[in-house]
Image (cartoon, rainbow, N blue to C red; front, side, top):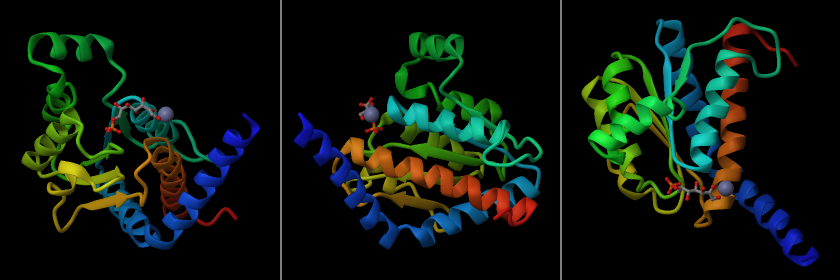
Length: 195
Ligand SMILES: O=C(CO)[C@@H](O)[C@H](O)[C@H](O)[C@H](O)COP(=O)(O)O
Ligand SMILES: [Zn+2]
C-alpha cells in the first residue's frame, strides 16, 4: 500500500517535470489569448467529462470568484453544471450534444472554448469544438495521450496544451497546474504583479 502511494506521488512529480519542459510556451500563448478575449469583452466557456468536468468548473469558479488575490469578477461559464439542460439535451438529442448546444446558445465570436479531455476523444467535447469553430470562437484545449480527434480540430490561432503522458490520472494532475498557471497569468497581466 505504502509503495503504491509513493509510486503515485513519484509518477505525478515525473509527469509534471516532463510537462514543465514542453508546455510553458503553449500555456503562455493560451494565457495571452484569454487576456485578449477578456479585454475585448469576451468570455470563456469550459467543458469536460468526469475529472475534466471538475477541472472545467474549477477554472470557471476561479475566474468568477477569485484566484489568489482580490480583483474584479471575470466572465466564465462551465457548461457542465445545469442538470436540467444536460439531461434534456441528452434525452432529446444525445449525450454528444450536451456541450455543443450550449455553445450554440451562449457563444459569441471572440469568446473562448476551454475544452478538457485526457484522451482527446470525448464526443461531446469534440462537438463543442465544432460548434465553437462555427461561432468564430477560439479554442484552448487541455489534452494528453496522442491528442485524439480533438488535436485535428485545433487551428493556427488555437492552442492545444497536450500533457506528455498516457495515464488519465497523471494527465488530470498536470491539467490542474495548467489551470492555476493560466489564472496566475490572467491576474498578473490584467491587474499587475502581486508577488
Ligand atoms: O477522473 C477520472 C479518472 O481519473 C475519470 O472520471 C475520467 O474523467 C472519465 O473517465 C472521463 O470520462 C474520461 O474522459 P476523457 O478525459 O477521455 O475526455
Ligand atoms: Zn480522476
